[in-house]
Length: 189
Image 1 (cartoon, rainbow, N blue to C red):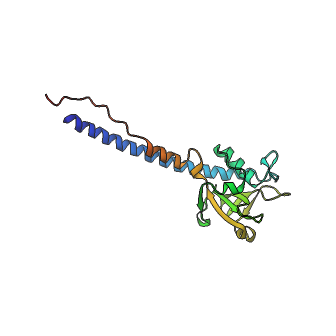
Image 2 (cartoon, rainbow, N blue to C red):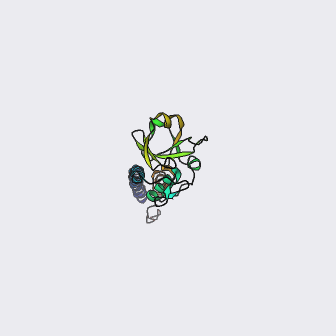
Image 3 (cartoon, helix red, strand yellow):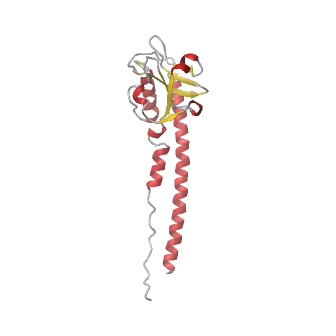
């Protein structure tokens, strides 16, 4: 009987230790997600001045809008996003303008069809994008009438990036508590 009480206490101690470990992982993941989003915005800003090239996917050859976004995500997170803005618009979770955070993707209708243009949100209603032929990667504002009238929506990619919050939360919830090793004490003594 005494051994089952000790085992229960050990198990409770393990449960609290596990819960504390899971909470630490979640806090760390949230911090990682924030840092990665900031890194996305910072990395995109490093490409200001790179020439626009239709179908371009590297700074050396030039970048189009989706090539810019795809390149930045690959460099910062190791994740390869789809090639087109339209396909990117189907990933992640929808974000309303008032909830935009650095690193979110913003989409526009610039070619007479929805989600034909994409940029990376920087904060303060600004985003970085590769606009069109004859131009270079630049920062624009959502407040301008041109972009405001063509805005199609925004998506947050944190849910699809490796090593960010959803993966760690799932890992923490899925983990099993180790059972304490107890020595069997015969009860017929």
